[in-house]
Image (cartoon, helix red, strand yellow):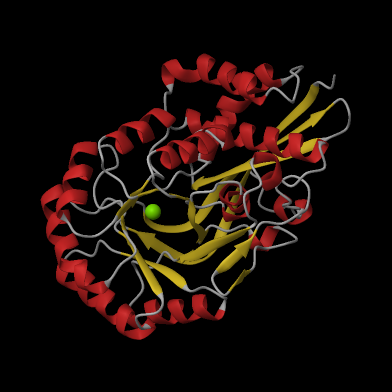
Length: 363
Ligand SMILES: [Mg+2]
């Protein structure tokens, strides 16, 4: 039986092509990217990564190097659940959420990639093999853009093959948000699907007013109207706002998703494997949603989430995200007529340009 005999953690700081802003994060100019690589005694390898805001990556590197590495080494790589739970139990006292879930996620992703590579299977087939074609949308981050640039971004997304587009909300006045949505809807017409993401900009009372005012624009959803863990308020907004809700990037455990879904607070659960503890809990969240008659969508990391959604019968949308790794990988994800296709290369199929990444290495 193979054993994991090497694990390596690297931290990169990658510049973004331009300054972008969302309501909760503020303006972003670069991101940290934590990369975990694992090798087993049969020569198989896997890698997982986690992009997060600049300055926060080193905390993950410490957790992985000081705790996860010794748990993973010498383990049987086919026992991912076993390894995941060992990491969780060891780390949960100071964790039970971020950044522990972020650190475990990078390791868990590497383990799934290794397992799929060693079986010579693409991840989406290993995880369930539902349908490689997944509906996608452009997750544009554009709160700081003036209206003409906002609309130009939508045009670029449409030219790139998208048929569904997300824009940001959370300007100082609701009036300004509404005028931006109106401009977008008028620009793209009624046939292009439109989502909007408030990134926790509002209190519940403000969110209720905003949702009711946004009804006329036929949004697929409004994402994170309020802080992520006020599940009672989510249910209130869902019952009274008149616009479907999505959320999930700021929930860090399977239990938090169970609580939000049980509260009746969500239409589109949106787990992010990088923030919920990895592929292992992501698939459980997807199945949990399915059991409640809900779809599952994704946040960020589209090159890997395309596999998870392609494995899930209740998939709704893949977010094609602004923190994409396109400059650093050999096969960037393509979207055609609003559809992304999970690749049939083994593992997650991301071939990184290691020498280019080396220029941005911090540790
Ligand atoms: Mg979001």
